[in-house]
Length: 93
Image (cartoon, rainbow, N blue to C red):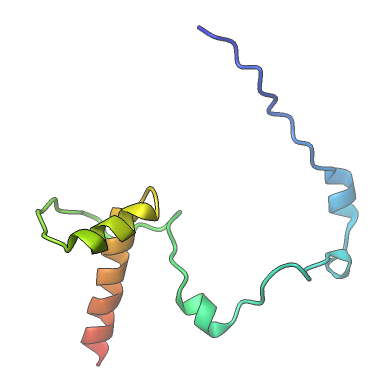
């Protein structure tokens, strides 16, 4: 077994952070969350989207699949999330 030389010790100054008030925190480098931006958000952690998934075979255009794969790990979940959003929009309209 190899030894792990990575330190897990936090380099955050927790005492300084805990002593700060909300007014002391600089949010100037954080983009404002608009309703449009929030509408594009996808919750991925802590919430199960569906209780059961079913494995299927689906044919997609190769450029569409390549684009989703280029987005990295989780591309199948993103495809599912987009299909779910379309389904919900279709049901409402």
